[in-house]
Image (cartoon, rainbow, N blue to C red; front, side, top):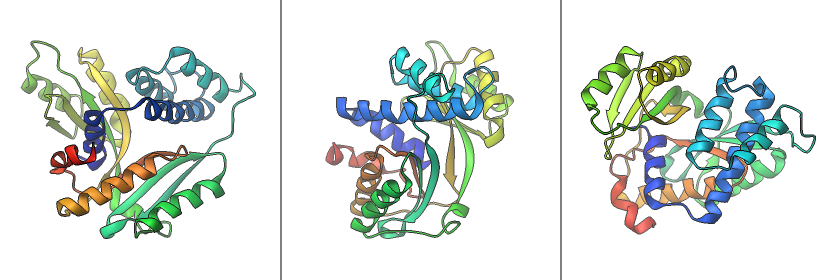
Length: 253
């Protein structure tokens, strides 16, 4: 499983406090606003907006919040801020590579906050291109089997739809990986086949991963959490191997 999706699973198991949910809504609002500004307010023709709205609904974000964010992005609400998309490349503690994607209305503030977190953890920001080559873009879809669904049949259907890889997660959900530009095509095919999609997003997969001992892994996970606590940070990707990270759940909760 990718580091990003594994980390997302860990966070769901840990649960979300009201404060973190409010922060998540802030991040989702920014993504919806930028998506609407970039490609228009129609989610049927704006795939990025469709993904953002789907995620907002999955996180139970109020509909009026979603609509207001779309209006801001499409210019119907003059109160909308102008957000800039910036990706920071960095090395964290223990040499783990990071890609930190942000949406910010103040790049000086954001780079200062991101740099401070890496410095405190013993890492540092890197030059453009120093880390990016270690990752490749992919599409990621999570499918929730319904009662009576056969996992093997779902897997074959996903492969027929164009999936590159299908993995069964601990809770019997299916993690479906697609080529970056095939995400919409595969998602539409899965929906047409009647599958229940929990989440669909573009993501960055590490080409190779770094395996650390339990203590070092926990330190890196805390670094990821500190980065994600920044309002300007949308997504954090690393090449840390999280295949054995479940054992850290109790200590991090």
